[in-house]
Image (cartoon, rainbow, N blue to C red; front, top):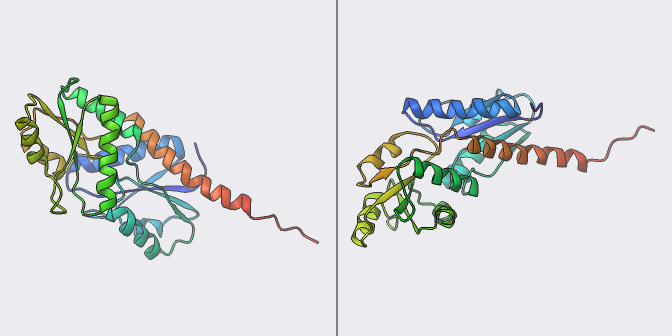
Length: 243
């Protein structure tokens, strides 16, 4: 177990109790490998990252538990770090896109009854951030490569006029002649967005990524990336020699 910097896992926040429990379970599982992990939320719930960082003594690694680098990752998290006043914080990459997530998505789809040849829609939370939209397409491509099927990207909430919403994507695939359409829930935990997928008209809805061993390892990997930055900085500072 690590005795390095504290790990702060930053999630979006949800009013769904199961979603909150899932984030707590993820943090507990990660704690088993790196020491105590704390959870903060950028919306809906508390504590906020800035509130939590004020309680952290010593260095901290902030891992954004987001599947794409949209507004929360590029704006909310850095602002919260600044507001906290903490002087020794490293913020890692978001969790996605990543080949690890694609493998878990495929497993979740199979558990939901998907079979090779069935159409797939990657159902992501809506974002008006072009960087997040690009990363959603990258995630879809990663899934397509291992599922050997074209994957359509659609959003659960309309955040930009160009975004295709999930029900429209399902209807379009049916119009193209696909007999069975499945939704890959590109969400970390249950909540309002995942619940909406049940009404999208698909033949099956995969569970969110959730507390999968591969997701736990991915969070640990992100944390260790951040911790190595502290180590690299320490190694770059020459020792002070006494005369």
